[in-house]
Image (cartoon, rainbow, N blue to C red; front, side, top):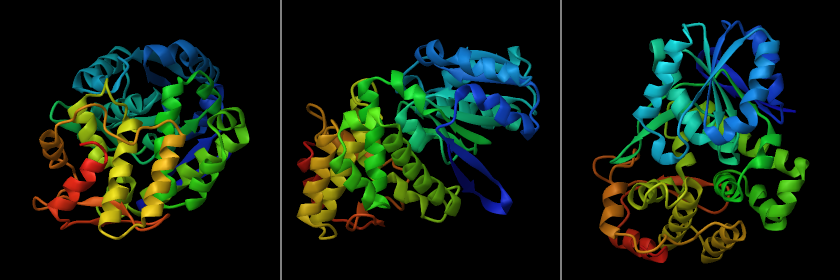
Length: 363
């Protein structure tokens, strides 16, 4: 088991446990002083495989778990799902000493975390990610949110988990497409902070990664370490450091909003966004053509798209990007690569260069 520490202001912090077992979570929670009532938030597909295992371990350690299921899918990451969790909290009589456990992918983690942040003005939350994407990204850092029809993650709160508990064995039931989605974020970490990750992904095959627990744990842990390091330096995204984690996300989030969450997954949208950002950086002479080509080739290698799906309205994309949280004084700001392992936020980019880079990804 690999333990990663997320260090926060004023001595706060929590552990990320990589390659732990779901059934052992209760034993790990016992010394932390929680009350007995625990609400497990999950989706039907995940709960069918893993909710009983998690609940069994909690009961053995003296907790009283109950389960609430929310609909699966990014398009159900909304206030209706949060309301469902609130109702379950009231039925289970959760109080300020109780605990919400998010058992699922990024959507579950976001919705359950936001419910925990706002129920009774905040109760504790533990993240048990079951998708590769959630393990390397969404479960760490305390960002919780739901979507509005106008855009992604427009309602949310920073609410750090008390613990992140990753059981890599749950990835055995992960659909193939979800493996690709998670790889997009791992590639992102390679570009922004660790070129060695990119080298590993250029030599590994998808089959090797899935069947080698050692390779998988190493990549997940390295990605989680980068996320933890950035979050520790900029917990609430006020110092500009945490913006680096949004590489590929400005266009990616716009694509999700315009195309629709059922037609493009988060990882697929971010992949297109990373290609766009690298092509824009190349046009601005921050990144060589060979490095931009290398990134596109690597993204293709891991089964991810490098072009927008079908015909996408450029005007709609530009409008959606204008709602990005990094926009300041009406100016777009993009996280762009300056070689491998380094990114910067750049603004005052000529509109013609942005349009040209959009064209390079089929928009």
